[in-house]
Image (cartoon, rainbow, N blue to C red):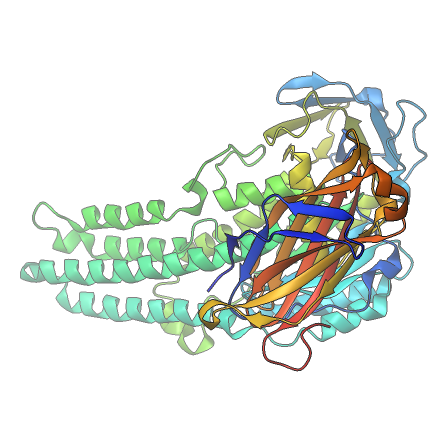
Length: 614
């Protein structure tokens, strides 16, 4: 069972002296049920001094990569050489920096981008990459990391094999990254199974062709041919639907990672290794079915329902499952097409957090097993093979184009990494102050530069997240990446769990503490009080997530007790309903008066096992 949420009243709690009261306006009971493989975590990632980004600076920064018509970086432009538009309206560039050169004196730079380390996640999608190309790609990647000893890049390693795992948190230690890349192991069996499913559909197609050949020329058998084609069309439909669902899993993992990275300051990039995400699931098999249909169309057309009609029906199925036409749509800024809702949301989240995708797809991976390659050539014609490769690469190109990154199709991972380093070592940072703040809407970005033959890459839009959403994202960052920020000195304690209703989950008591001296209590006429937002997120060991939940804590202290209370620790207690097994919990506590927030996380073990917390 996947993650869910339920609410229940939790009452009140107080500090040890009983003089500080807190009420949870909407108390929480997060239900995380099910099991899964664990979220791998290494040593404390904070040793690299990675901090979270500020949420109160209303400046949008746009990283722009400029090259000439030969692909060489151009680094001698000034702020006046650029024109920046948001939603079609020209905006003033208030912050400008040339990274790789001296920072410009005017306009003022919002920070020093050249001093902010580049955070790069090396992401291996084991659910989509073919075993035949995976090891070669990883060997390329290990070679680059081994040589990259001097840069200020901070790397992490992640993978998706039906669940999202952080194999190695952010570190500057190249040997730790290399060890993580060596210890990835073999691809998950579910990823390999997808190839077997495609081969099974191909075998059915071969049997169909053989049956049709025996019937061609016999007009009385037209209905039987039609039935064969209709049955096979349903098999293709089923395969395409399964493929659409598994592709959605990869999009979800990438979106969750991009959202978590958005809370980090400065430059972020995801190097995504995959054999591609199909823009139109099952498209190659629909084309193969179309070719089969046309191959027998001429000699056996009878009645009002011809094989051409059936071909149109098959292609209508393809359009119905077309991922690029599902859900709400927004025209692509560069590709000219209509991305799927999954792709649109992924790039919007990435752009909101300043995350660029550098996508890699190997070419030449066999479409079918070698044992049936000769027979399958009758179905996997050069045209169908070309359709397959284009379909797999289209999404990778869109991911990169829309976020200011690069897609390498058929080259080497090493070349992709070199390009990423070149981009982030010499680029322009354009900042502007939007007319809106936290409106939750998507805003398109357009950048122009003076000069003939210049090529620009940049993020094409972003979602302006409300403050509450950005704070909730901080909880996701702590949960997934293990990156904490705790200026308020928040503590998190986990008590012994007890079995819940009908044994479906365990109730885990949580005690949240914060030094009273660190809180900004406001005088409300005889009572000093603070309304503090609380954010709670949880993740099962399978990677199942409950949506980040928000509650409001009201802390009150009588004026006569204020001085004494300042020296005490305020605590509040609540229960979480969690599934048995390893879980990860993240809690955020916000002091809105001082505009200070703390986010802490814990790994816990739930259920009948020695020790209920770690």
